[in-house]
Length: 94
Ligand SMILES: [Zn+2]
Image 1: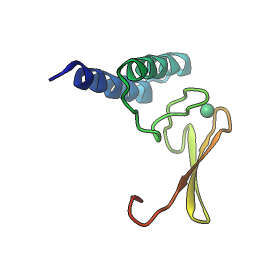
Image 2: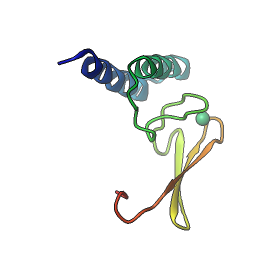
Image 3: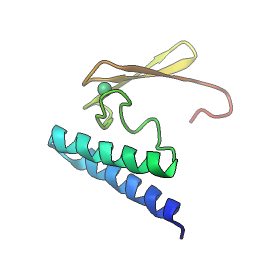
Image 4: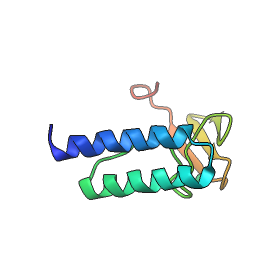
């Protein structure tokens, strides 16, 4: 296992921790840490697991609202109202 893989694992763990954390401030701290590690190791974190603007973990129904609009899925952060569009393309949509 190389350093990058370990870093990726750490990031995933941090995001999970953040999702389970009830304290919003702590939760954001975990995300900040994960992002720092990711940046240093140039790994991409899932863009659907937290808000890029305010760092809040996206828990559907709690901190995130998911809406379908024409040809796209909208992820709306309930903490800062940031809207992220995910176009629904035939191949890559889940
Ligand atoms: Zn946000």
